[in-house]
Length: 177
Image (spheres, rainbow, N blue to C red):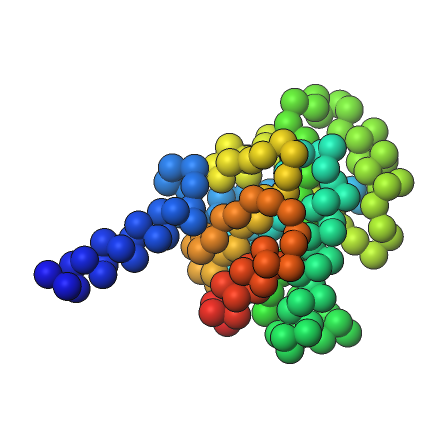
């Protein structure tokens, strides 16, 4: 009986962290950044993945989250800032929801985004708002999804990149390495 209670409590804890119904794995989503480069989430299997996403009006907040997480992971010795991105055990993606934009206007949007995005940074564009459909979104704050090496979602949280929030995400990531 005790084992069953612990199992049920564990499943409830996971359910609290993963919102959006059956979204327990990262979707088979293909993204495009401001330069037109493509990335399929499935290609990131084998690495822990952190996706910071939200509305296109809050891009600066998503980028700030990503930067803070990168600095925290470097401080914890997960990787060095000089390590090539493809060699890092953790991939951090900043993603802007771009749903409702017709495909004919997307090159124009990428140009505008490019002008407002740091040169050393890829901002991935979710043209169909799949992340918010699957995991929920708050139009005023960023959301963060953490997936393990197999693509299973382990944490979904929404809010500002406060010290406590960043520490919580880093704690989950460290547990997955």
